[in-house]
Image (cartoon, rainbow, N blue to C red; front, side, top):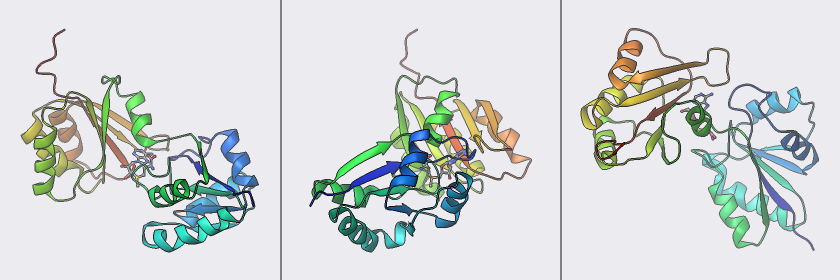
Length: 230
Ligand code: SAM
């Protein structure tokens, strides 16, 4: 029997219009959609009038769900994987099912779209020819400082995901270890309260310290330019 295809589909990171025609078509056509957050998936699917079978696939059921979905794919059914927002596997679940599908020689097809890291980078004004995506910062200052020490000589633009509750302490650690570099704070990209702050780390910290910060944040920091000859 011919095996089904596993589609890895990027969904919007805020604005529901940020999805491709192909993603909408494939989401309507597959036999099953596996989603990290079924509630959020419903909002997207309802918006596009997609009526399809939805099942959960998140960090804590990844192992058992992988086995179930792989069995489904082996019987010839097509499965789409979506995360809560953006591109699956980028600081999101998906790695396990993709690795297993590859092992079972199941075709894995990407349907590209939004990713907060790349979207923020595209408007950052920082060098984009080479960059390093670091994902979420460690929540505790000790581990954060160890990470920044390791990254201190990195010449590529650095991209981090960070929570609004820890952004100010993370900025303070960065200033201490990396120095007062150029940075970009991108919050709620594509959403109603979208905000982009560009400046030195100390300027961004000063702007944020006096207010309550809410929403989703991507932070970009310029690489080490000490040895850059212009
Ligand atoms: N898979 C997603 C992607 O492709 O970007 C990332 C998922 S990760 C669990 C969620 C984090 O991404 C948030 O905590 C935030 O750091 C960043 N993020 C997601 N949406 C964002 C947005 N609209 N604006 C800024 N950062 C965002």
